[in-house]
Length: 286
Image (cartoon, rainbow, N blue to C red; front, side):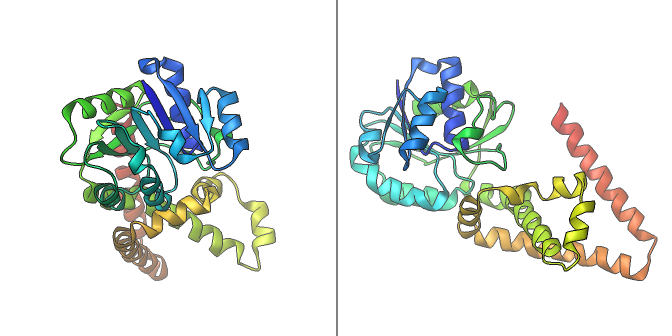
């Protein structure tokens, strides 16, 4: 088995580390990165066996190609690698949005290959190869959005690869994926950024910052993420994200009204949120 990983950041690097750790299919892994320093470090850390700085060379002879780049870069990657892909090979990705990626795959990749979109529901606020860890995907849901013509054997292979990472494969339609993930991943990113921008722009921030503790740190963690990755997510899932922002504003306005009126109903609203979150946590622990 020959695997090519395009993009050696947190996700690509962690996939490489996890696959090498379990020696999945005894695969030889070739990595591609724009910067030689990144590629060299990935090899030193054991995430890949060798690297190429030429994208087309990186995918030559590969049975599986994993594109782990920011989402808006994927279109160009598909354009460059299309002619180099082996008949029957599998191309997958790790982007946080899927609908555009699916469309690019249909438009740009040859029908002789199998495209299966992917999105591991895991990550950190850090995005470089230095943050990569082999168990990043352990017990996480790993979304898969295959094209209709994907061969059953290719689907079985990718599911097996996902399981070898310690993740749980979930086949889902691309449009539904983007709508749901916008609420539980993309909206929180923007809320985190909005809180940081709101507070740090305040004239009181110098004093306020000395009081900020775990609550502020937890709620603003996502704002420490890679701005390029975040921007690509927002620009590739606009409709779903805007819909969730509007819904959030409506809910926040309800809470604002309760606070402004000094209503005791604020405790009921907070209790409802507490209960809903607790049910989710209990479900996660099972």
